[in-house]
Length: 165
Ligand code: SME
Image (cartoon, rainbow, N blue to C red; front, top):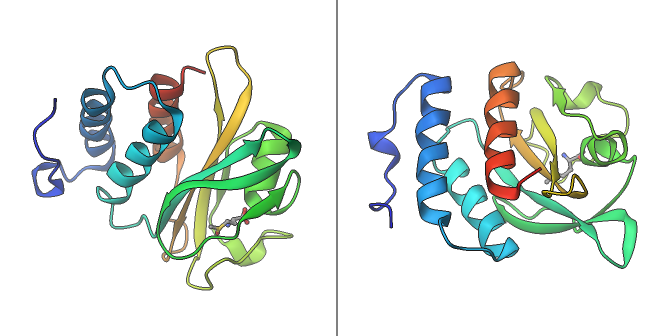
């Protein structure tokens, strides 16, 4: 079991901070197979590690409506409940299977504004060990252009470690 999580102990450089958080996440989740517990832990630990993380959470592929995402574990203000594949940044990530880095959400066609304070965002597809899309991870920031390839690579590696895909 990891020590109590404390962001004051984390390194200040972004890549080093991601590496430290990834280690903490792996330690906390060791032996825990429940998907909701895994998603909730990732959302909480990421949200509490980076000032730029204003809304942090998962939209999961609805098992009964496979072309629709439904909100999962998250940290932040109220998120919208459902997003159709292809709609908004999350829907595009789900439909294309590609990471979306959006420096200015207002310039993204069809962006869904759950909270008007969001200025930029990154969304990554989440896959299981069989390569099936199970969710997307959505991180929104109040700052424009808050996310770049460093975030994308680090988050992708955390998602692979935690969800297998
Ligand atoms: N920004 C997302 C919608 C979800 S929320 O902001 C929590 C999108 O356009 O996909």
